[in-house]
Amino acid sequence: MDGQVTVNDAHLATRAAVDGLGIALTTEALAEPFLRSGQLVRALKEWSPSFKGFFVYYPGHRQVPTCLRAFIDVIRAARGSAAARSSLKNPLTQD
Image (tube, rainbow, N blue to C red; front, side, top):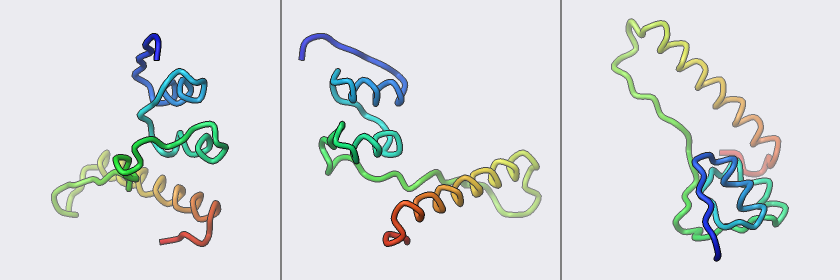
């Protein structure tokens, strides 16, 4: 390839790849619509594992600081809504 484009934003990297400027290391969530439409193809499939989500490790369940409890609740709510969205896309692949 001639030239070089370097970005530090997954959205820009995805857009650049869709526009034919090269390859992108991005999240599956950003690439998925373009993979479905054929605008992008997965390269190095064996080296691109699925992201199972974030994990929060903290000591015990007693006296959890209020801000940490709020963060955990937000993560759980987001995870629940993501699971609901994915089950709407393909109800045959529920875990």
